[in-house]
Amino acid sequence: MAALDLEEQEQLAQLKAWWQRFGNHVLTAVTLVFLAIAGYNGWNYYQRSQAAAAAQVYEGLQKLATAGDAKKVADAAVALSEQHPRSPFAAMGRLMAARAAFDANDLASAAAQLQWVIGNARDDEYKHVARVRLAGVQLDLKQFDQALKTLEAPHPPHFEALYGDRRGDILFATGKTTEAREQWQKALAAAGSAGTLKAALEFKLEMTGAAPSPANS
Image (cartoon, rainbow, N blue to C red):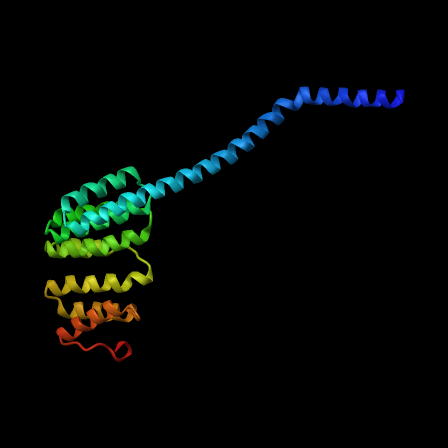
């Protein structure tokens, strides 16, 4: 028993010595682990709460848009993008503000909202939507060269129909009917089964005396 007690005492002494040497490091490591876990959970909670807040602001913005007050929609969209710049609702709000400004015939404000989306949206999909719409606004402003330049940006294949359709509109407005038809034909080929866009392209081709190709009819 005495030998066992002595062995236990030696082990205890070794443990105490080890703890005195490495105990602070262990506590620090454990603390860092718990802080990391807490930080991760806290960040997730913050992200969720911010997303919910952004969604609530966007819902209010939709109500303003329904009421037709373009100025209030623009102010709300700016506030939303300043308060929640990383949220997809920021770009969505700006797109809605651009639409409200366009409907109010304030083309300069519509263009400014769309430029914000192109320069600040975190999702490229919103940027492409904004580019196509901006080119349309520039077309209405008769900024034809600028509109075509806006559409020069690289874009994924599923946006080719929208880009081609808008290029055709711009070329047609400048009197380049043949080039416009070519763009609309390409857009029609890329549109696939997109019903509304396909019907619009077919109408434009028929209107200008160019029947859709058999493959697209």
